[in-house]
Amino acid sequence: MDFPTPSLYASFTKHSSADRIATDHTILDLLRQVHADCTIKHISVRDCDLLGFAKAGHASAELITEGEPHVAKHVYHAPKRRLESSTGYLDTNVTYGRYKYIL
Image (tube, rainbow, N blue to C red; front, side, top):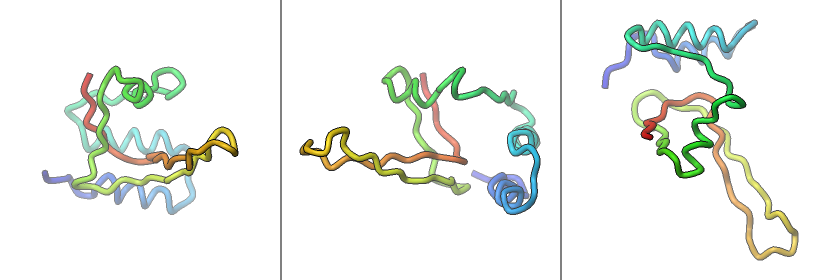
């Protein structure tokens, strides 16, 4: 798969490395430039949590790791109770990425 130049990731990195006012607007503009044939909307996670919907089993959301890189933080969640036999778990919070989403 070929990506337009400059890549979204390069533009995102450049924007994140400088003074900025509205990251959401910059990312929307970049997405609209690269995907001019698509309708791009900004929807709050609070209003429409697509990844939460998928985690609940109502859809499938697979992070695309080929092509442009993604930006993610790995967060450790300790067991709810100290005496629990569970060791906790790691969760991934993606800041920048693309998903294959299927209902």
